[in-house]
Length: 123
Image 1 (cartoon, helix red, strand yellow):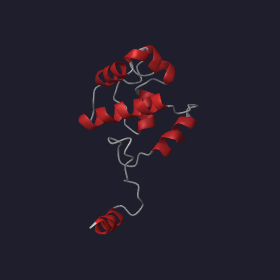
Image 2: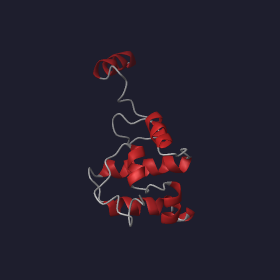
Image 3: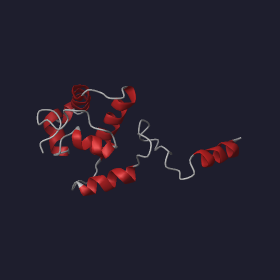
Image 4: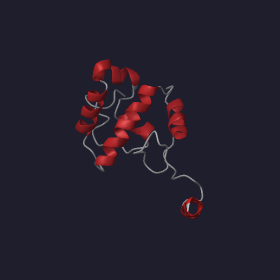
């Protein structure tokens, strides 16, 4: 039976682009850790486990709601990183803004207002 499933996967997704990394269960189609790493290099970042956790949090928020408001994303990130300094730590981790830059790394469309200095970006 497994062989039939593998054949069906190959027919439906011949390039394998829709395979999901188990570490990122809410990743959008076409997203991969390799793509995130390339994007991070373009933005002069070296991905750490905390960067990956930001990606997971954002992808989970988008899985729950198609276009989550910027405030919900900010609250989710700040709650997850509260012990490390919340907002201040997040801006050190992602100087382009935890939401704006985080969404780029997660291959998500940033919500409107995420480039506002008070929420998502300092650029």
